[in-house]
Image (tube, rainbow, N blue to C red):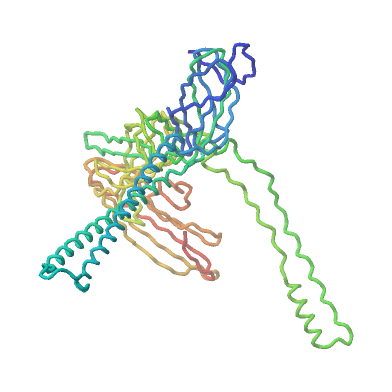
Length: 561
């Protein structure tokens, strides 16, 4: 079979071609590529095409199929050209109309039989009513004078007659009760069948119909692929980070497991399909937003107040007061301020989509229903050699926390997602992995390190005034931080603290520390500092620091974030 490209055809193949006709074709989903938002579905179809020009009709694509994304390509056992591909929304019955009509006729026949049975039961009930009426007449016989007859005739045994009447009347009552029970059961069956018949009313759903114009040089078999994109589908990553802290003779190790959660409500089930996960974000923008000139100018002067009308000579005093009351508010009305101009910001999702791309092929076949149910799969596993460190911010909490610095593998990028953290086989909590490029470094926290003891003590807190001519107020505070390493091996330690940041030139802040900080203004956070060092086993480190704030005595200060 020869693979043929998609082409626009408009050619007459000769006098031997058959008359053009519509050919109803079916297809099944073979493969799906899922994006963070949306998915691309690939359907396969095998069609027998007679010679000539025809239109293949596929009416089972979901209604959510994006019309502009539909593409058709394929190959044939002979010369085949694919022309126009037209789409439209149609209403398609839920079931086969012929099979549905057969089922309706069967149910209608059952209902007719049950109604005939109900009529027979009703006739039996009426017969028992007549029988009961006849038996009731027999009870009136003793009140009827006996007919004249020969002397010495045998007298009537009324006791035996009454016994017979009672027995026959009870028998008729039982027969009538059984008939009424059968009547109720038949009526229930009729109602159930009528409900079932009503549910077989022609049900329709909206679908996308694709018409593909083809031209075949002769009778042939074709294998076609239909590709289209749908919304209401997505995948997002989540991770397991398993840290082995190691021992004195064993280096630490971190295993990063990448998983994916897939869900979709596209209107069709993906059953036993080859699944791929892509980091591409189609449809979220292809170019950066445009920036337009922004100007700055003085605000326009406020319009002059409207002149107060002078009262006419001879006007009454009450009229003057009224004019003045009306003019004063109008003169005091402020001018409307022009709306503030804001710079347009670029959406982060579009930038990430342009910078990082990767495709993950899920092994085997997978089924993802269209109910929104999450399907979870594992993508890959990476073993990383981490760098362990201990970090503490004793001003807020006198605890030390274990961190692992990792460099992501250089194969594929890592999308943002939740990460489950395990330390030496124990789950310690959840974290978050940001967007990371291949080879980028990142730190993950793995909970408190109880083998590192931290103490934080306030040494001095004093407020006062200084100066003779120009006095100023002062605020002096100092602390002592003590950290002890109880591990059997050395650790990398970072002690974080901060000093206030002045927001006014008249407020002076002076930091006091016997040991200068290793880093200042960490992550562009002013006043935040770090003291980094290596702490040997059983070693204790003492850090003393503080600050002095001075400001004019006529002012008052406040501390804030």
